[in-house]
Image (cartoon, rainbow, N blue to C red; front, side):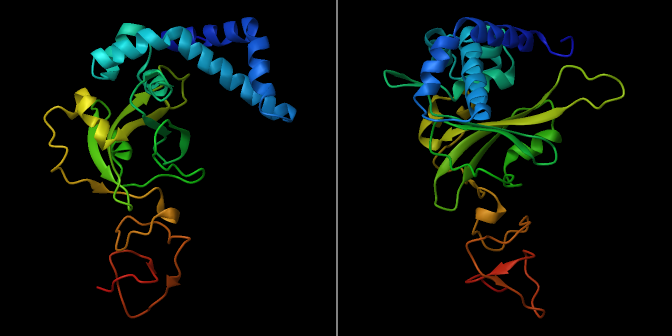
Length: 257
């Protein structure tokens, strides 16, 4: 398609190559999953072909070696392997061979309405299966700064800390008069791996205060959050006509202001 850029066309060619040449291997892997309906088998097959395509463009050994040598500089990796920013981020989440592991990254893709269209994690980040993400996460700020890569240290309610980078990406072209699609890509890892990243240069990882975020509003129990859109499903909602709080929602054990 002329609406797909060069790296996207290469990916689709490699995808079709995988479907043509590797179906027997795909079927062996799918067979290990047990009984599946036709839709599930097709989705599994397409997922394997997508992994194959990414591996053709960014072969595991050379890509891991380059990532380590470049301190995981995403834009330089994209230039070296003739790929896109999003493709590199996705590939970084798959470097988990037992004898050749990369940093265990997580990645997500959101649109400017907060809809999550991709969630991948090779580490411990607790993505929710459904719903959006925390509005305090810098991935949402990229739409206001489209030409900048943003860095942030985030902290979950359990005290776990992560370093996160985020950047907005555009689809290369859209037919007139359709709007050009825009997405924000977020990539991160546990703070203990951050010193291996070029993006952590100059940051005091121990002293920098993390931005308190949650998985999403329905699963977050942080009190007095001015950005809360919904009460947590794990707590009892409290309704009080006489009190105005920072948050629109009060729930059991919340502090009153």
